Length: 450
Image (cartoon, rainbow, N blue to C red):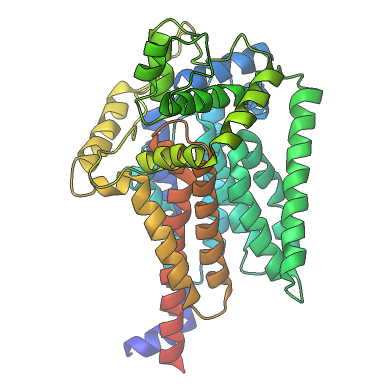
């Protein structure tokens, strides 16, 4: 039997399909075991510990996503301990993998969907109890449902809770979710009206915001911390230092000049904290919120170009050019706490850290920098334009457009250089590689059979 006749044989195809399906299940199972073994009960930063305390006490504030803390609280009723959120994230991951495997045109490509999560620039954060991870895994499920091979509106509608959760845990996700809704609407509208698709995306985004606010402040009674004033105070300080006028008279001139030198907000905040200012890093803690808003508007409007330059400079610093080293590509396990939370298997965590560290220090180091993934997302959009009209083309376009939207949100305000902020962007672009290759393979196969 020739290779061509073997591939045409229904029994052969069925046997190969079963083998690839079994291999895919095995890789997914190995992935979950690897994450659980290395991360359990879940790596936790100070933010993670703070949110866990909130979930335990059922006391919420908006400096961290209240809905995420509430979901964590609900998870605690099923599984005690911080690992309850890790289990939820793993459920989202498995569901996302499964949904995307259903969209693959051939069983052999299904294997690659769970395989990409073993890449060191994705596996490094897979078990960290962060909103960035919850957002990414939720969007993984949502995109698979939105752009399903069947083009089923019912399946697409099932994506809404996952889109909402992604938005609820990270408000800047609106620039990642809105493009997805827009592209999906274009596909499901018979006349493909761009203006209607845009309206649907806007209405859905506003609805997410309203529902999120209603749940956070109405149902959960979350305390308003006005985190935006922290960012505004930093903007005013930066503009003050660069224009030679101190618009924050309670900040000493020497402190202002010294602490505005770092290129990223987080580092500037640490400097002010070290000099005795508010422990939270805010320079406007004692100022009424309305006064801060007014002063910020006046300052930014008076110096729009300078304000934009400050934003752009911070964004470039976050992207990490080839001349800069990767930044914060690994969470140092579980931060010190008084809740008795400790790693279940420190040796496994150390082996994973070695895997990530060796990768970061090798020729793969550029893969740990956001600029590379931004570049690759743009390249994928260019390649997408050369693809034939198909569901795969829509998937590649939507995934990378969502990634670029997420980058745009970071351009608006990026507080630190943490690699985790690009987590969804990296997953989306890696996934689009598989979809693109699968589409190319199917195209070549069709030519052979023609």
